[in-house]
Image 1 (cartoon, one colour):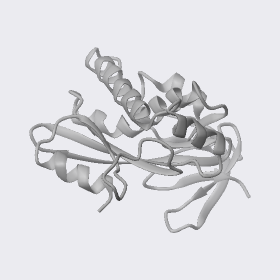
Image 2 (cartoon, one colour):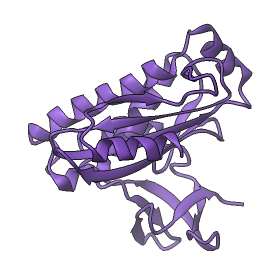
Image 3 (cartoon, one colour):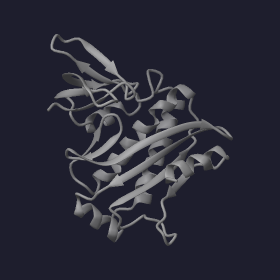
Image 4 (cartoon, helix red, strand yellow):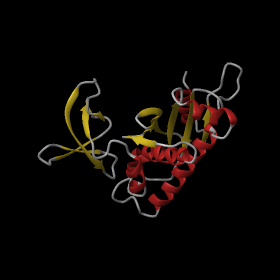
Amino acid sequence: MSVFDTVVKLAQTGEQAGVFLAEDSNGKSTDQGEKHVECALILRPDVPMQQVMGIPYVVAYGLAEALEDAVSNIGIAWPYGIVIGDTPVASIRAHAGYADGMFVVCGLTFDFEEFPEVEELLATGALSLTNLAQKAMATIGSWAENVKAGRAAAGPLAPILNEYFERVTLLGQTVDVVYPNGNVAYTAHFGGVDVWGRAIIVDGEGKETAITPEQASIRASR
């Protein structure tokens, strides 16, 4: 069972907020020196249910901001992947539920195999998976305070939209809009991201279409 699935079960039994790391075959945490590492967060922000869908976006923003201190050319691949240049290095998935209050589990999977300089930072402790995860949790905490202060009335990404937007790759470029089955729906201009996390796609006539991650993904046009 993956760390993500294990932590979802913990959350469903009422486990409180925290960071949970994968363990190797010797029972030691894989916090340092691994090419492929994963962890999961239990998040219990005190926010209205309609704001919950913004959480993985906020986690991605927090991770990107934390990685920028140590790694150059970090970006966010819409909706909430982490890339170095054009290469994916981290993915995020989320599961929301209710047990002893509302919770969201975010699973973080990192793959730095193509970036030995990042592996070296992990191996020496200069970069820590625990610290990255804690930074993501702290970002969620700050975001939740903004939500409670009414700064997310327009949509869950409103408190971080400018900072998130600045880190999103492919903005302003021609992209393929790809259905979940892998087929390309059409090719158009990636115009932006709205406060609900939808990608704004602009066709050749200037018509805008908002798409959700469930409807399609985007990639650089081939």
